[in-house]
Length: 348
Ligand code: 13P
Ligand code: SF4
Image 1: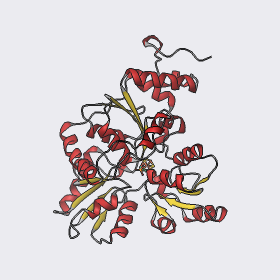
Image 2 (image 1 turned 180 degrees about the vertical axis):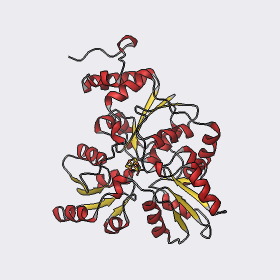
Image 3 (image 1 turned 180 degrees about the horizontal axis):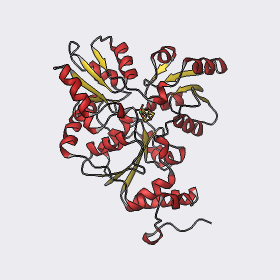
């Protein structure tokens, strides 16, 4: 039997105590507490399926930042990694932003720091800095404009073709953008995502030979040789859209997205390009930590205001270029009522 929803007195001490509760009870507590706190739960496409099922909005980095900028909720609970929660705080400074586990960072974002980027800028006076959103607030504050995997090409195309670009921190995304724009003046930071950079051609060849009719879609954080062999290169939200359009897809990205697509379309053939493509950082968020986070109103993301303002300028430029935010379509509204909003968020 399910116990009654929590009241102040049945708040438990640690996430471990919550882990002893059933999933159903955790879900019940989470939904009840979310209402009490006037909170919205934003979840990235790589989250565990159980976290995805209690998220009000699921999406890629662009959609999540647009949602964070537009939400009317007083508290944003971010189930993703640290730079994503930070981005929500940068865009919605008046709102409280909570994370279930502060250790959920992005190793790619850690490749570049504010001081290191400042040194590179000194070596290239006049260059424009494009910061992939997978970066800290301090790095964004040093950038002219941010980008995500879904708008990186458009962002770079918006910059004077004669101007040198310092692109941080993902070397693979930088190379992909360089190829798509034909620019030869992009200086890429030598960072990468261990999940995507580790995927290799042999895995792609094996998946293709086993599923010759499947569409191969690869995230632009993957290496050049993989992107060359892909039928499509797109962000996680782009992949969700493609999953709706095709009966068989090989996904060159983190497994969390594939798990959700399999649940959503059990009749389709969806295969992870690599069974090892798991982002351990994204998986640090669990239902029990989320329930603890809501009950204890921890961990709050805080930012230095001067850095926040400068970082916001770089993010705002990106959002303006990506069409800002617009209300959900009727179909999105219907799915929202059914429990989970789709990846699309009305952005251009
Ligand atoms: P998306 O913006 O495509 O969701 O990518 C974020 C990310 O961290 C991919 O590893
Ligand atoms: Fe960072 Fe890679 Fe994990 Fe995305 S999948 S959050 S880029 S480590």
